[in-house]
Length: 295
Image 1 (cartoon, helix red, strand yellow):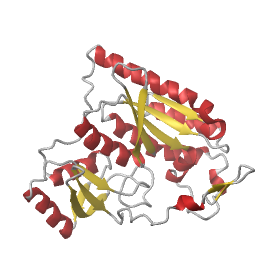
Image 2 (cartoon, helix red, strand yellow; image 1 turned 90 degrees about the horizontal axis):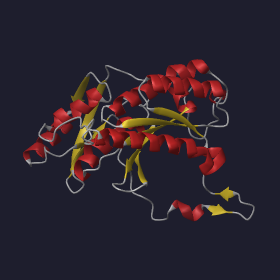
Image 3 (cartoon, rainbow, N blue to C red; image 1 turned 30 degrees about the vertical axis):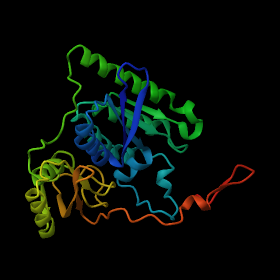
Image 4 (cartoon, rainbow, N blue to C red; image 1 turned 180 degrees about the vertical axis):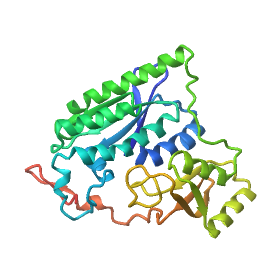
């Protein structure tokens, strides 16, 4: 589940929307605990992006691998898989509400999704606490297909603004941890509150690096956890909404200039260096409108 954050510009009619990153358990958590803490931004709404296909994988559907044909279960109606997989979306909604903002689910529609499948997701999303769940069909209709989503986001932003005006909220996002907590305590808080892990295992190198960061005076920095986007755990194969798992932290590095300490979990890797020859050189648009070289 990807997520986006929306906030009203003070005294303006526009809305600023920023993509927080892969998975609400990763991008959304980092946005609030790192970015809003440092910037003072006061988001009004978080938009969680979901698809029926992704929910089917979390419901027990066959693995999806790049370069291999998509299993027919993802293009045929299967209410059982969708219903089971919605536990993942519901967990993302519950987690996002912890930060004190309204939640809209943008249900991106594929042409193979059925009305029954979309309705199951909508019902379960609202039951989990989403302020709105809107089918967005911009894939087929362009901007016109996202009008209802835009209206839903505006409505939630306005409701949030009215709530602050009436004294129902300070407009300050809720943070999961305080800056004075130790780095290990911050990691454990995110692991338990967002990933629903039962414990965190710090490997010897990570223990040593975190202790060094504390000793050098970087303990007050927020933490940025590098984790797979395919699961709430550090195991990409563990689908759905797992609980009671162990989060393994193998390394910790300080990014003092960026203003956080980042830790590596499971088998996750940092982004490799970019090539000297950008890929866009091989992408072209033919006279008939066909795009070549993109994949």
